[in-house]
Amino acid sequence: MLRWYKATLAARPLLTQAVTTSFLFGVGDVAAQQLVEKKGLEKHELLRTGRMALYGGVIFGPAAATWFKFLQRHVHFKSSPNATILARVACDQGIFAPVFIGVFLGSMGILEGGSPAAKIESSYTQALTSNYMIWPFVQLVNFKVIPLEHRVLFVNIISLGWNCYLSYLNSQSGQAKAGEVEEKVKEKVLLSS
Image (cartoon, rainbow, N blue to C red; front, side):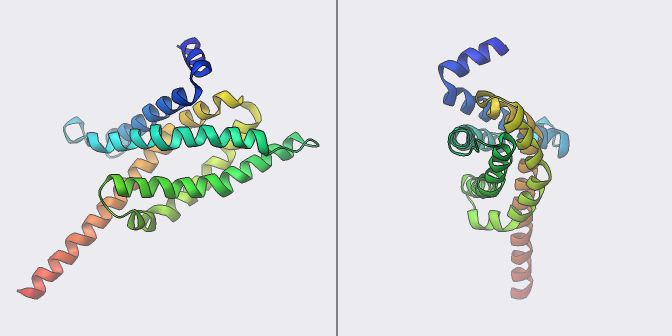
């Protein structure tokens, strides 16, 4: 399996990373629904899993692969390999993470037929704060130890838990909004009666 993955990665790197990311984002959502939310198969939201997989394959996978190549090419200090690694982590966490948490939440808002701004407003700060508890350390290992061609895979493996968290957070913000709307409707009904 690893030999096949390496051969596919060498032949079609961006496509392989996109497909792998799509699959693992979907797995993260399944874990969120089945292990965290304990929905059971009969209540599993296939569209939600599809949205996560679509985002992973079409947006995040290609973006992460391109970003890692950019960092490899443009962020380096000849005098200090450790300074290079720290600079890459700083760029990743100072630029990529804040932007792509917003892109994720906004994309989910659009794909769910809701408001991207409302989705971002309800979950962005919590997601970014949680990101900073995990990802700087993961990326430190990623940039120090993992070869460029395997960095997206490494991130995807760690992301199984992260994607589960993002899926859960995203679904909770949607439920909170639905609950707010329901309360407003009830208030209007009571006022009109």
